[in-house]
Length: 547
Ligand code: HEM
Ligand SMILES: *[C@@H]1O[C@H](CO)[C@@H](O)[C@H](O)[C@H]1NC(C)=O
Ligand SMILES: *[C@@H]1O[C@H](CO)[C@@H](O)[C@H](O)[C@H]1NC(C)=O
View 1 (cartoon, rainbow, N blue to C red):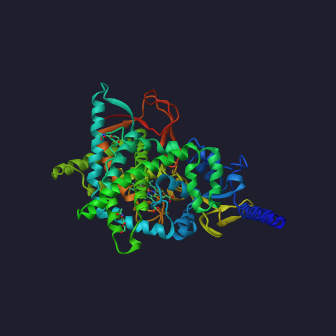
View 2 (cartoon, helix red, strand yellow):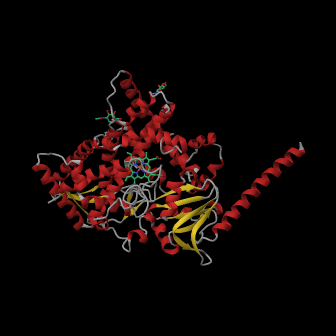
């Protein structure tokens, strides 16, 4: 048996040597590219990146230092390419998306949150998911959601009125973010699943409980040991990865709890929708009903498995509610800081209200909302300035050359118009970096100023991205499927809320933090809301009745 042992040792050593050689090779090629020095060989720049005070601070710093594309140090000497370059983004997201999948650990974490749904899927499976879910996001279908948006936001407004009426000063400092997440949760539940989370009215709903603060609990400041082990998941066989569910890490257990709660609810819902369908009561327009109808199709290409259908509920809810609520929170925060813009938006909304009343309408039509140019400009500017997904990770599936729109200087002072990447190398795309490229957005890219979007024609693409040349919703076949949904929901929210309420900064002006989490939630540097001393996503603003 001696020879067998020797063979095993020989093979192991050979594998290690091959790995080391490949690493060296990658590092050699990427040495050409400038980047920050590494504070630690073990964690590279990864730990610092996950511990930023303000999400994006490091992206912007590195961009100033090295130009739109640079090299980072990953875990255990790994090399990462980081870029804000539009051509590089177009290359990876639009032109060759199959060559730049999400990294294995990223996919696995997505599965832990929501199961094998659309966000988790890739390649052909993803195309099937996307095709089957498309009917929910067509223009005529989206139009039917407008009354749902209006009804839910008005319900929140009523609650604000009651709260303000009880204040002698007519003012109240309240966590605008919490309110908005609840209303956005109810909206996505009703529009997508014909389901009531009861988030605005029922504090004790089970799903709401596991959901509250979920990204802060699970994705903010990941444990160092987790950052250390995640790059190695890609070496594990797929069937093994499911075991990660049982890792004794607090955040992993919390993520699993979220998925379990969704699976329970989604199974019940799916059963109801299937019963409706079988009894010929097939009138429902929500996503679950669309999926059940597709499941009855002759062609297996048009079907999702039961597990896939169940996974869509978590996928759409997670992708769809906190993102929009966070964007709106940042918008109202900016309006509190820029009162003159707040006035402009409110005047515009009131002008359209007067016209709507004059024609006998009690609500704004979609055409009204689409004509509110100040409101739309402020929304776009907020999506640009505070992209809630500040960056995304991809991995090069094979050796490749990534072309650059904006050349960078190499270590040796040479101008690089393209950069090499090797199979297995991670590429991090900084959306917040792209959204602030002075080459695209001008010298005042670091200033929140909606006027840059006034009179700008969106059809004239100046960069990449599915909406307004922003990368906030990404681009290509895996771009945000819900971007129109989100924009419409936001349009309704802005019009309904600003018409009645005014926002200002609280008297003690807490320092607001852009949390470097999976979603760039607002947070507070120092405790302030009603003496609450907990780390969590929050945005305290002072609200009052608009004059
Ligand atoms: C301001 C709000 C939103 C932002 C900034 C946003 C951003 C994004 C981004 C950047 C991606 C791509 C992620 C990646 O490639 O790693 C994405 C994907 C996705 N988003 Fe959104 N999103 C928003 C709202 C919504 C809404 C309202 C929905 C649904 C109602 C939604 C559903 C999805 C889904 C299902 C995917 C996965 C698409 C796929 O893999 O094909 N999102 N979103
Ligand atoms: C609130 O949620 C709890 C737990 O899910 C449920 O038992 C209760 O009936 C709900 N109450 C209302 C008013 O919906
Ligand atoms: C989907 O279709 C299969 C086979 O036709 C059936 O067994 C399954 O129960 C259906 N699932 C749902 C949720 O309708």
